[in-house]
View: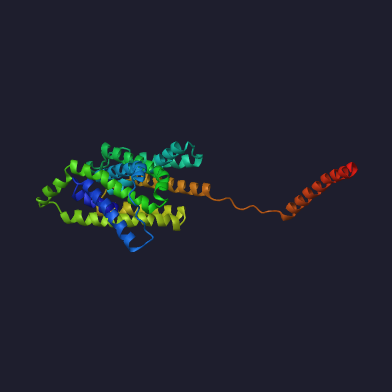
Length: 327
C-alpha cells in the first residue's frame, strides 16, 4: 500500500488531495457493494443527530489523512515509518489526558524507547545525499499526522455508541464524511483543473494515477477489514509481530523499488521503534490479562460454614430459653 501510494504521489505530486478523495469514495462504494452482497454489512441511515456527534472523529480523521499523504509525498518510502514514529507516544499521552489516568512505568518506558528511535532517525547525517534529506516541513507533517492519528484512536471509543457499536458503520461515517469535508478543498486547490493541465503534457502518466487510485482504494478497504479481523482472531502480540515483519519488508522494498538511502542511523531508528512498540504490546497484553482463578479450599469453606451455623444455634438458644421463662 505504501509503495503504491508513493508511486502515485511521485508521478502526480500536484494531486495529493484528489488522490485521497478518490480513495475515500472507493471505500464508500465498496462498503455499499458488500452491504448489497451480504446482510452482515449494514450501512447506517443518515441521521442529523449522529452526524453532529460524529463530526469530531470525522474531522480528526480527514486532517490526519491529509497530513499523512503530504508526509509520504515529501519523504522516502523507507523513511515514512520513522517520520510517523511518534504515533505510539502521542497516543499514550492523548489517552492519558482524555481518561485522566497515568500510564504505568513500563508503558512510559516503551514510549521513551519509541521516541528515542524517532530522534535517532531524524538526527542530521552528513553522509546523506541532498535528495534523501527530509525537510523540516515533511517532519512537521509527520508529527501532525501522528498527533491526529492518536486523537482519532481515542475518539473512536466514544464515537462507537452513535454507530450501534459497529466498526463497519463507523467506517462508513468516517469515509463518507471525510470525502464530504475534503471535496471543497480539492476544488479550492484547483486540483480538478490541474488534471486537465497534466493530460496535455506527455510526461504525465495518467494510467499510474488511475490504476494507483483504484488499487490503493480497494486494498486500503481490504486492509482495514483485515486489520480488524487480525486483532479479533489472533492475539495482540501475534498481530504486532506481523506488523513488525511488514515494516521490515516495507523498508527493504523501499530500498529495492525506489532506491531509497538506508543508513545505519535509519536502520537503528526503525529497529528501536519496533522494539519499543513490541514491548508496549507485550506490556499491555500482560496488564489486561485476566488473573488466574484461585484454588478454593472446600474443606476450609465447609468448616467455616459449620462454624457459622454453630454460632447461630448457640446465639438463638438463650433467646428461646428467655421466651419459655417469660411464658
